[in-house]
Length: 306
Ligand SMILES: Nc1ncnc2c1ncn2[C@@H]1O[C@H](COP(=O)(O)OP(=O)(O)OP(=O)(O)O)[C@@H](O)[C@H]1O
Image (cartoon, rainbow, N blue to C red; front, side, top):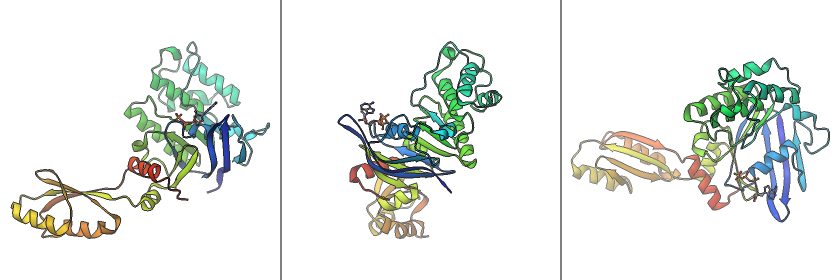
């Protein structure tokens, strides 16, 4: 996969506020990357650097081989951007709005209708944006970002305001773009919903990158315990207590369920004992550390991983 975005040792301050410090990362074709961090971590600043809206104090930024802050940034045509807060002219219809942006981007106007259909605004295309719900405006923003089949899509908090069904259809569109070879950067606080959607997670904290890898890589680096939960069979209390005593420090969740946080080294032997024929267990669930837990871990340790 070829590299579409290269950020090398970038520092950016606003006055005496350091928004990004010595940040490096690379994004590739066909890759969906989650950019995760608290408020003020520097996510929007990174996106603005990639768009050429702000200039770094030091370091290098390349998008599709070009410097976005240079006067002639021809690759801008191949960038799609959905800002955190979309704002449109309320008096125009959805179709008029998208036609306006298509003209600005010099994209064939014929694509406007199909894009509106794609984001589920086909029927509302000729209504004024002022009558749209927040979710509909967000989808119009997404349609605007998709104009011209961009090779790099920068989506700042894209699912804010979308209900669960719209979120699902949003991630379906992201998956299509990924299959089409686009690089998709999703900046988000909604960590749980990003599991299974992003190929890679980049965590920033106070302007510094503190983690970068697939969720599996981050899990193996963090070495957080895996939660194992078992449902007990209707065995006599004595044999259950005996089994618990032999296998580990289980916590009782209720009368028939136990839970334990298994350290990576102890996980397999614990699962073997829970699955063995003499265990008083009728069901077993394994819950790996969530993205939320990984995020909290990396924030707490400030661990750099790549
Ligand atoms: N134009 C500006 N002038 C001064 N400070 C700024 C400016 N833009 C951003 N900052 C500061 O830079 C830091 C990074 O801000 P940025 O908007 O990049 O964070 P973020 O991760 O996108 O936050 P959020 O999740 O709240 O949108 C913050 O301390 C912010 O206050």
